[in-house]
Image (tube, rainbow, N blue to C red):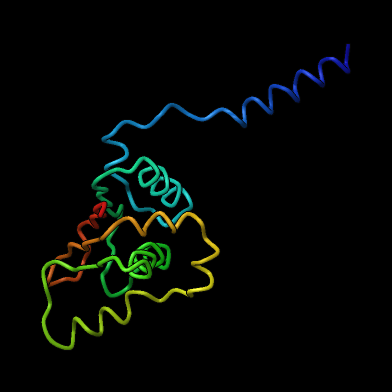
Length: 145
């Protein structure tokens, strides 16, 4: 009896791990909240795998355009690496924009190649919308090419 109970528990554990949650609605796929965790990566993969036309990423807290989190830089870097466009709005002219672009993509090419989830970003372009006077990011819009 004890052996049968153990088998049942193992089977239930396997079934519990293998079942996916309910499918995400189109609005859930179009709106992703940025929190610097693996949950963000999973949500981006889900949205891009579903070939969502526009994915709006909004940060939970204050996020500065001058201190882009590495996780977000990797997604934007993957777009750039796959010949996509990463734009900023409002447009900045002069040396500031050049400095920004140099600081935006601090990712290692070899690391990115090993991360299969970032490969989906190659099908997208991105625009970073931020407050010009403060540099605070309002949202990042990923648009399917």
